[in-house]
Amino acid sequence: MIRDRGVAHRYAAALFGAALSRKALNEVDGDIRGLAKLYEKEPGLQTFLEAPNVLDADKEKFIRAVLGGRVSELVLQFYLLMLKKKRVQHLPLVFDPFERLVEHHMGMERAEVTTAIPMPAAQAEELQKRLETLTGKKVSLVTRVDPKILGGAVVTVGGKILDGSVRYRLDRLRDELLAAKVH
Image 1 (tube, rainbow, N blue to C red):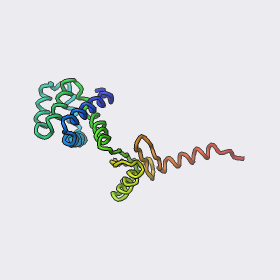
Image 2: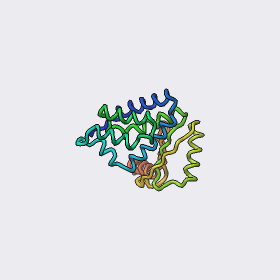
Image 3: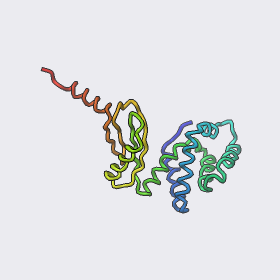
Image 4: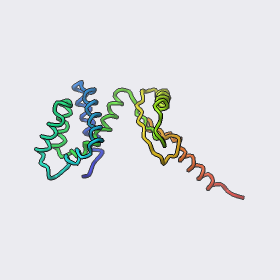
């Protein structure tokens, strides 16, 4: 099915607004984080919810059975609304924008750090402290591993990309060598 990030952002903003107005932001945030982990562990869940051969009534019963009593009533109703509005395919895309709204509300900044090998916890903690000093905000660090960068790190924070990867340096060196005039 086609997934539209714009639709997901609107639903994330609506859920955020509803949670904020009901003074349930922490509870809903915890529920959404838990559901994001569930989706990572169980990709078949989304496949089931999108299956055209499964009746919506059966999907609703399933959602109530799985989520009822385990998540806040607001999150349960949110899921059911997305099902009713035929927007269930956008559910996995709602998690990240919702988390970003919560982080922004709490005065936090998300920093995404990509390294060639897993970053040791002590190094990640030191980087987080430096980024907090740099941004003046509490930083939530998200780490990723991508061996293609060869070494170093690529940090994305506050809409800025700080590329200290070996791959970037090698590419720049290659460009300089190709642009150099040989006499």
